[in-house]
Length: 146
Image (cartoon, rainbow, N blue to C red; front, side, top):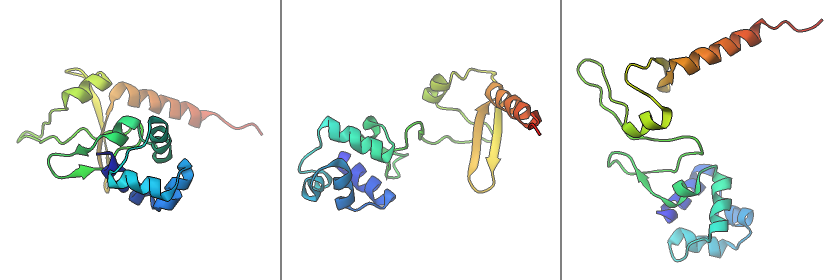
């Protein structure tokens, strides 16, 4: 678990073992033992690793898979991968219970559907989207002093 995440995160960020070891204040050999699974870092070193990679300690030490397709890298702080959903014949999907609970989504609540032609789809609670739009319009209407 931890060892796979350390290898993935280091490679994703383009660091060598030597560079990460230097950032943490340990030898490259000590770090290499973490990646091989021979030893594990103490909690303070885990905190430092989590800070370097901008992930939570929890996601650093756990291995996550997505629908049996393999191990995925730990997400950045505040980012989540909740799994996949299937769209039925009527174009409907069920948002996972954990997501509904985390974001306080309830039946009948309006969501705004946003898309990016290259990146995909995002759902935003309508109240939040409308609030952000009002703020943007207020900001845009402020005239600079001459």
